[in-house]
Length: 66
Figure 1 (cartoon, rainbow, N blue to C red):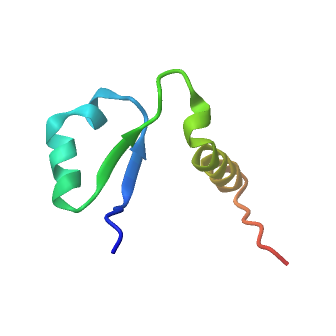
Figure 2: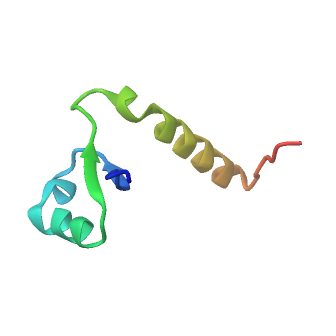
């Protein structure tokens, strides 16, 4: 059986590094993950998805695969 668990990827902000926040994550079976400082490519797929989501929300459009 795999010991892998879900991970919550955040930026390097102090609220996400706080012990209380990490304790709540652990209580829900989640691990915390942060990218390296100054390296947006650590989480490029999620960053790209969020950019698209924000752009479509601003335009009030959602494109679906045909």
